Image 1 (cartoon, one colour):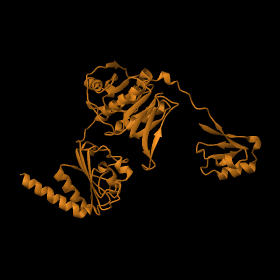
Image 2 (image 1 turned 45 degrees about the vertical axis):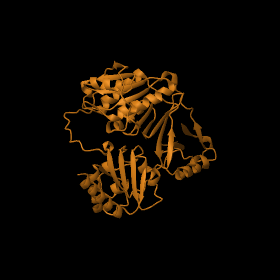
Image 3 (image 1 turned 90 degrees about the vertical axis):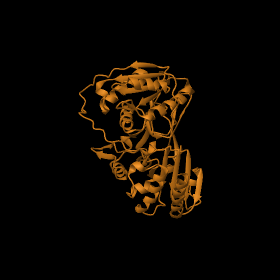
Image 4 (image 1 turned 135 degrees about the vertical axis):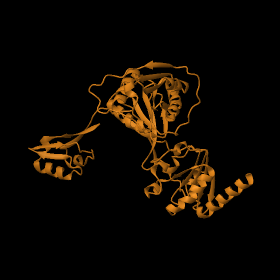
Length: 398
């Protein structure tokens, strides 16, 4: 990292005042004949350019890490109330691919209480070694004991890379643990690649999906990333050929500040990420009332209703119905899009769909570049005709 150095012998009171006024972030302070740089400095280097050598940039040497002391790809197993989240199994499949590049093992970390069956399942899905911390204090998720157990695992196994599902639990836990080890974390990766030197290439959309950023952490270990559900394919289970290692929960340095007295589970609603069929609506729908046509099609197909971001921003549908980079990732067997332009942000959230049928009045709409079947037309003409055809087929089939 770079830092600013003040050369007092080249600084006059007038110049110091000019630099204080010049700083767009208010990060410079002149008091008692001393110019100081505050925490607000963004390293824009404007003061360096205007100081005539009174302020310079000193590049600190990059930290060095002995990569030979870190080996393996680890997956944090998202486990709650006796169930493994399926994203953990998807990540095990990807971890096997990544570990094959370097010939290193695949680890799984399982935290909770009464986890025996889950540990065996992780072995069947590709873990060479499952580290289990089974403790009553981990029966319900609270970030402090979970972070302590996670850190203990890292200190014990020393994995080079750690994959975490981008669930509510994973998003809460991963940044805290990464900060403990002073390492980076890339959120919501859509692709992962492994270099022979064990650097993990973490790929995700950036700048509104207009570019794909390739992010590496060459000077720190372990490397952290989170991945959404349905991004990678779930592997086929095999024989449980690995081993289980027990970890103990470290004693806390001070009492934990959060205690869970009771957990009341809410009725589970259908998640569009789990849907086999989806009808997705976009800005081609002119009013909230017109969503009823799309709901009719969804009912006829046994599908879930989903949407693009503008409809959520209009308040027409709940955010849990949104597909895309800022919504849910889906991988249905069938998705029918109605009035959806197909911007990169939306397309990235459904790229794994088995069959994409698009209806849009604009023949140049990007959705047709990814659709398997496309129909250019006004959805207010196409949709009623499609519903009528479905009804007729249902009658004839009966």
